[in-house]
Length: 549
Image (cartoon, rainbow, N blue to C red; front, side, top):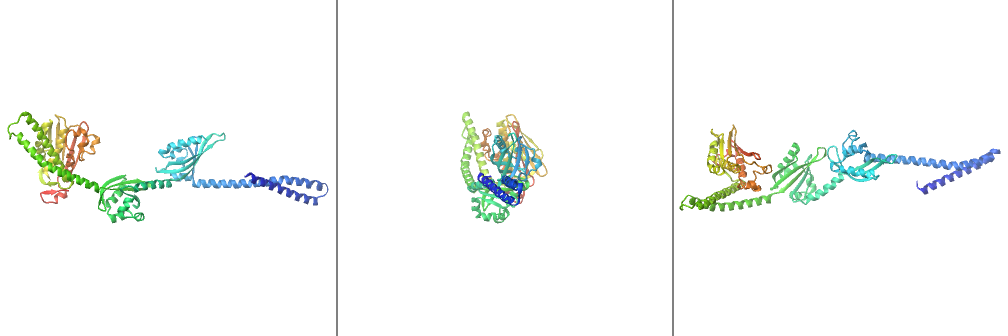
């Protein structure tokens, strides 16, 4: 109570006592006579004047105390309802938690009581508990943001006030914490910052609710491309947009991720006639909810540059092949003695030049084949052939390379005819490339095995060497264009790195598949399978020569 107010109440109580004493004195002298009349009025007046103020002050104090106790009870009840409260002992173990904290974190009281308070903290924020304890042990109150972990794993943000508790001897005995959930406000701030960043990107960004498939966000680029305002796109879902813009691939990718529990996928698609590289990522939320983050990267400029580069390479290759063929032919005539006998030294040098001319022509042919594949212009001459005979023919044609590298070839599964419909020249091209690699990477004196396995529906051809194997960090790109160029050891063996890329394109266009098995230090087996019954895209054409895109 304020001192001034207390003085006023004391004075008022004293005045009341004096007034009542005066009334007592006047009344008692009027009605009392004798000895009582001379003693009792004065004594009673003194007693009333001294005791009544004390009684009045005590009654006021008791009423004030009851009011204060009621007010405190109401405040504690309000705090308990609207704040998350927990009490921790001096061992940092939880001894009490209120319903609000249980509701926020998803735990039951039995799961928390007796556990270390650190169980509530998110992993990156567990050190925060140690920082708070240091404050409390020094008798200080700690205030700040704490990052908690919900039972389902989601992150919660709270603003906390944590006060130390002391026992009767003044020793620290634990703490009491009052927290307010600020997760929504924190998320809004984070989302606003993220939105500002996404708005500046040139790529189109969509964010879609995984449950309703409704749009929750489009960045500036996406809105501009689709000519939509925020109100317009938020009124639509993926199905609506699929009806308007034909985004079936995007819609199915999202649904597949949700159904199979995947996290992301990438593919190429078209949006409003523009070629796009599309990335779809599932962002999980709490209680099984989530969002799709869909990114569209316009690759039209990149494709145009690739076409220009391809056209340039094709033009240059065509221009080079004619003079190279003439040079090679002239050197061949010289080596055959058409211009007379050559000195041994000159003949040796000319032989080297002739081999390198061969190599250059092979490189140019690879580049031209790759250009045809890229443009869907590679021709296939489909015939009924004996695959076993093709393998033997290819082995004979490569006898010179076997001698150069000091290796031998072992053929398996070629004793009986293996009849099928395919392009014999393209099969020889694939086999020659695989054998060439096997020769280059095998040690002199070793053997290479070429096997043919025939079953009712398909044929498997394998080329096995005993070379160095393919390192794990190179395996993922072995069929990429110019793969040899990225590895100095493989590049030292020669080759453009285009051969395996061309092999894959040929095999896949013939309806088959290609792969490899490798062990470093032991060797590698390249294999491809081809269907004995032609794919519909070939069989439907009755002409002898087919063009396969």
